[in-house]
Amino acid sequence: MIHIARFYIFYMLFTQAFSAFAGSAKVYVWRNEQGVLVFSDSPKPGAEEVDIKEPNTIKSSVDTSILDIKPKVIENNFKVEIIQPENNATIRDNTGSAYVSARIKPIFKRGLKIQLYLDDKPYKDPQTHSMFVLRNIDRGEHQIKMSLLDDKGKIIATSSPVTFYMHRISVNKAN
Image (cartoon, rainbow, N blue to C red; front, side):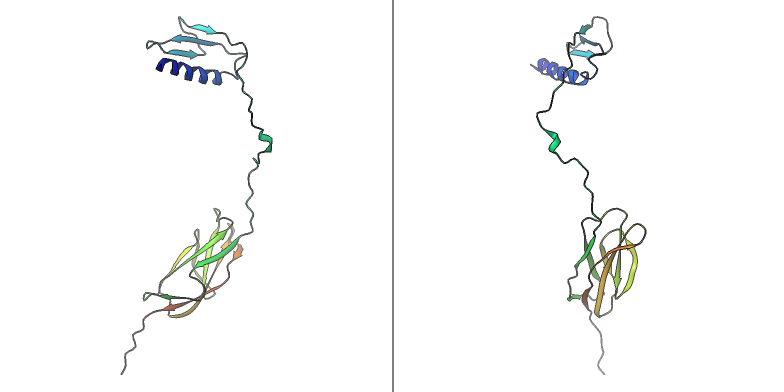
């Protein structure tokens, strides 16, 4: 039973592989030491030539002309939206740390960078991902926004500003 299955698999692979060359190539078959049929394009002593009458071609029953196989073009109508922190959020952190993240639509492509602005001043250098960690931010009201930069450094999209409030403990000593 195993030999029949192997023969069938070899036969199917063989006929598919040589269907393109059926008109010009010769095919030989013989049994190896284990009794398994071997197909080859080079003769061996004791091998028999296989008579191939017509190529084994299969026509697809699926009409592929209706398929949309054109590559999708990603539009460059980028949008940047700050999703953390939310507008008018209060962040309570005694170290003055805050996590800022944004969503880029339609897709954050390779070569683009994000610049974070804190109180209308660039915060550190632009980076290749849309998550930032603010450190040692003073108490009070702050405004952030992000700009998406192309590979030449040109601004191609800017988020709406988001206001947040940093709440830190203050140590005021009474007299």
